[in-house]
Length: 321
Image 1 (cartoon, rainbow, N blue to C red):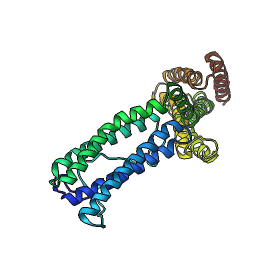
Image 2 (spheres, helix red, strand yellow; image 1 turned 90 degrees about the vertical axis):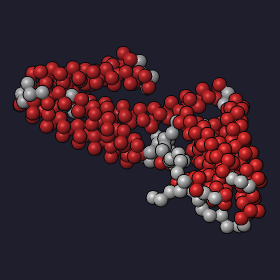
Image 3 (cartoon, rainbow, N blue to C red; image 1 turned 180 degrees about the vertical axis):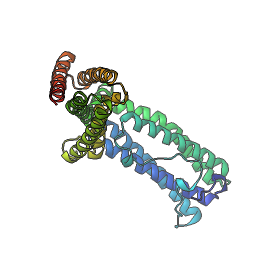
């Protein structure tokens, strides 16, 4: 796509670009505020304030443009001019954490500051240069304003509450579906894989069964989780994300003790696979303890008992064959 260099823009085009940038920033802050309103109302209020400030900048730019160049404002956007950061839309990047949004906002302010400084140096019109210098100064003060807003709205108690809410959302939207998939993949595939291993005494046969069971379970769990609910009432987030996480972790759980059967020697492959199973069960117990507040010994007992029963079932059926 053809793009222009900033230095090639005339004063009318620079002013039109500034109007477009302020509108972009205003709507971006509005999006951040809307995204945060439900779970982080105090942080959302900061972005509502910043959006209102950008709207004020845009009105001042439009007033000067109308005085200088009339009513028609050409649509010049950031992606028409070289040198601007790529700024993905928030709805393409969900879910975003609080710190990520704050980092993006800080980067936006720095970019606006550099833009107005360069625009002021490039223009020869005194009134236009004065406005750009004023806006550059205001963008430079935004950082201290933002810090003041943070101190006003984000007290240590509020920040702690928002951080805890963010952790709970992460557990609800990522950890829970991922853990469900990992448990299903690690435990449910034990029986068919080890049944095939003990029935045939061939690594290759166990490998084929394991690959089929792991990938099949991953696909099945992905669609089942995605179809379970759309997250609008439960707060569990995007069904596509949950389905992808669940499916991937299910497949990973099964593949962990399947891949050792790439080893041609059956007895070595079996020994490695058993070690991997033990590691998987310990990992699941640790995740439940870390994120689900389940005592480690209780989590280990529940997971190990279930895993051992499924493992013995596979050995019994395979040995009987």
